[in-house]
Every structure is written in structure tokens, then in C-alpha cells.
Image (cartoon, rainbow, N blue to C red):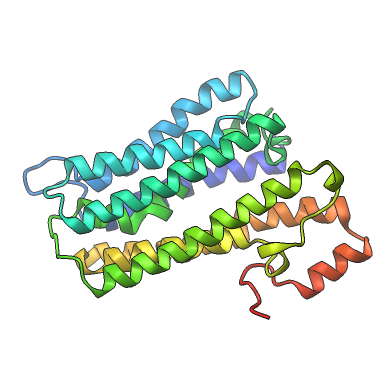
Length: 291
């Protein structure tokens, strides 16, 4: 067992413990309701992990990552619908949150699946696919990723409290729209850039990508901040812990599974080229420059 496998083996229990902590927070301190049934939020978290493990088995057998992102998006849709349908009430705030999460998951899932279907692979998984432990840890981490990102929205949807739409809903909706727009436009710009044969072997530095090296990730953090704003009035007690969701999204993207991997791959591919080094020096990593 090499160092990476040892780290992954130690990381899996930690991932599960953090997932359990979020399950407790989103269930307001108890995984069961007063009637003795499991809380809808706790059920949603459990299913988020279970779906990843079920998908991991054939993915490891056939050594493919082609359905990794698609499974993630379908998991968002499944657990959000489950939380909504099993909640004590389905008020307008819950319906708004449901719609926004489904729109985001549907668009991103289709985009990512189309991209990997065209390219045939995702380089992030090249080194970990042969390892049962490392590849399994990646799927387990996706279960936590789903729990983290959707936590505030799921907690609000599953909450027995159903406050009417208010200023938080309006502000959160506008923030979500801004983040969603940035992410979608950035993805479209990069797809268009890469589909042009003359850009073969080049890196994108136009459009939103001239303002940020990872504008799609910036949009992702912003849109989940919008979800947290919408969710806030219906949360109480432990449930307020789920408002940390956008913070964890930022940490994971900036320090764990997103930007570090992409920056490393870009440095290996274009490092030392004058135009690339200038781009890195003059372009913020995440928050877009305004001028």
C-alpha cells in the first residue's frame, strides 16, 4: 500500500464522520423525528453516499470514470426530490429551492456528461482508477460533496417550518442567478474555445477566463451562497450549521479537489511558457477582476 492509498484509507472514515456531523446538523441534532422515523435530511445524506458506492462498484470493475459526474448530478436531483416529497410541508420557499437545485444539477450534469462523452476520459482519475481504495475514496468524497453543497437547501426543504417568501428569498435568488450565470457562461466559453481546432494545445484566456483562472468555480460558490440565503429564515438551532455549506464548497474547490488539481495539470502542460506565466501573474485564481 503506497502513501496515496494510506491517505485515502485514513480519509474515508473522516469523510464519513463529517458527513454524519452534517446529517445531525441538518436534522437539528437528532437523526430521528419525534415520531421515531428517520429525519428526511438524514435519509437524504445516507442516500447521497449510498448512490456513490453503488455506482463505484461497476466503475471500478470496468475502470471508467465516465459516469462519475453524471451520477453526482443525478444524486443531487434524487436527494433533493426525496427531501421535498417526504418533508412535513412543501411551501413556496421549499419549492423555490427545489427548482433552483434541479435547474443547476440538470444543466451541470448534462454539460459534464457531454464533455466526458466527447473526450472519453477525465485525467483527474488516471492515477487513482487502478486503486480500489483511492478510487473508492473519490466516490465517497463525492457523497460528502453533495452533502456539503446542498446542506442548507436540503435542511430548509426538510424543515417543518415554512416561512413565506421574503427579502432573503429575493436576495438569495438574485445571488443564485448571478452565480449560475457566471458558471454557465464560463462553461460555454470554454467548450466553444476547445471545440475550435485552431486552439488545440492552447489554454483559454478570453471572456470570463480573462478575468479569473477558474470563473466557473467562482460561480459555483456564489450560487450556493444564494441557496443558503434563501434557506436561512426556515432554519433553527443546529440547522444553522448547514449555512457553512458555501464555505466548505470554497474550501474543497480551492484546497482539495478542484483548483489544486487543475492548476497542477496546467503547470505541467504550459509551465514555463511566457504567455501562460503572464496569465497566471495577471489573472486572479478565483474572484474575477473587474477591470
